[in-house]
Image (spheres, rainbow, N blue to C red):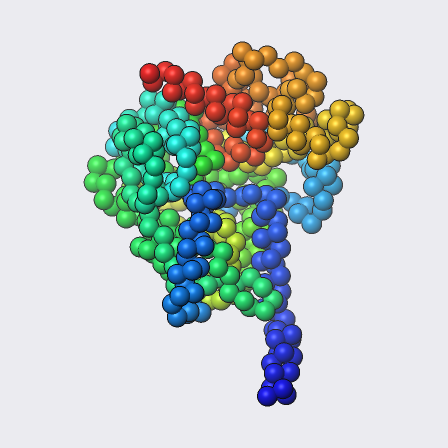
Length: 471
């Protein structure tokens, strides 16, 4: 028995080299994830952890089954400061050139302009406090949008949430959480990870994947939702104008680029999972803009087709251990893969800052980090940790010695030039973040990268302003 045990120990220590490499790359992604905070899960963290613990208890009490042509931070191997120092942001001119070339390259047939009253915004928003719904739903209704809103929410929401959503004419679907069919794998010993939960309707898919077939079910149930469809994250997004009204030339499937050329598919978030699951380097390309899987629009038929393609790809990944990880955002890798692998018929990539959805995450994080670095350089803080705490507490302007007037809270950006091409990024009178055409971006996504002060001093005040006007 001792000899057998030692032999097994040796076998465990000598894992297949490729498997070990795969797992180490996935571990790298998970470590980096805590810094980048890349994707919204659609479920509140505390609520998620509570459900996760319940799922683990339920799983342990039962028998266990161990079965599951298109942006991303460059210099990910360097320290944050070194990466920021080496960063060369593409200017507005670069973005405009890319937008123009993308527009001229698109020759697909376009649909008639969408009617907002017949359109729908769909998202998973389970376990959040009422303030998140006031931010997401309230800002959308404040634009004058009179169409449908469908949200997946907790099965036992508090009364203030249900009352608010009912008042805003939101269609809600309870999302029941249960145990998952498949384990994800992360460690060099191949130990199954329980860092995921699944819905009872789709136990084969971790919740980040399961939201896609759930959205398909909800859309099919809405017979009045015949025009435009937006699939979107909820916690880190708000609206500045009607997204369907903004679009002059609808397409069956519209995917949205992040900040190109600064962020491409050759990032660990997108390239690594695809390379080790599909054994292809199709995304290892600095010329392909990264697409955000948290923001997709299209026609009813186009979005149903998009979800079917995504679910088919999920089915391939779930059945292979080397494709299953507990990475929160690998749906973004799959989203980019199916687009650039030409699996989405009629899909069009919308260049950064030109469409109905503005993914601000990269620019927001760079602005936030550069204010921190500049405060340290000016000698106003001893180190970047102290500076970050100050910026989160007092905002950009006070952090760099600029006056911050209480009644000018909408003017949240520093006046001194950070050298990041931020000129024209926002309107100082309204606080709105702008597209390249100077119009407010209909949806602002990943705004939390601006830091905590932006949430408390701008977003929450914006929400309160909306609530006051509703009285």
